Length: 204
Image 1 (tube, rainbow, N blue to C red):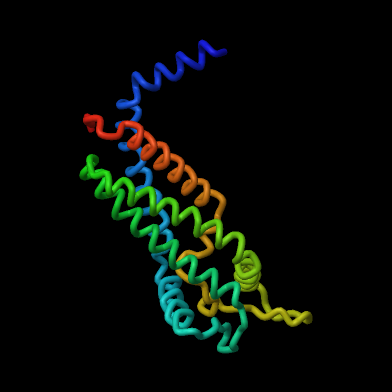
Image 2 (tube, rainbow, N blue to C red):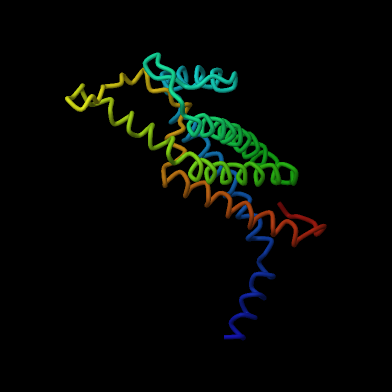
């Protein structure tokens, strides 16, 4: 077992430059791909229009409202702010991945990509931990769009009245979270190899 361990370390040291190059080819392309997919999925005019209104109302201190009725939802307000942070990190991921693809020797750009991935992962965790009740409310209201008024007093909310910022609901899907975690793992490994190589001349 010890011999296998030594062989593995020797192999890694022997091929670390090649592994380094491959990861820094895959990571930015992967980051670019998931950024484009999530942004494209967010480009629903209705969601953007409602999200823009929610953004202005939330940042100006007003509560979100449904059907014109003020609705107290601190959790949703908080989730909106965090999702805005996540969208900002997503934009940085998109920009830095393009720069890294164009200039692979730019270590600052690589660090920026890692930072954006860290912010994305952290904001996803915060949204999931703190915004659970808020997003549960949203999911109930989304489900209510297909319902008519019943004897229990359930009212059908028109889709135009569901105030949800950008693609906030997409940010909580397990598939998207998995994609972001993979991106984080790739960039951490790549930057760790960067630090290991140090001042060693790069063949990128």
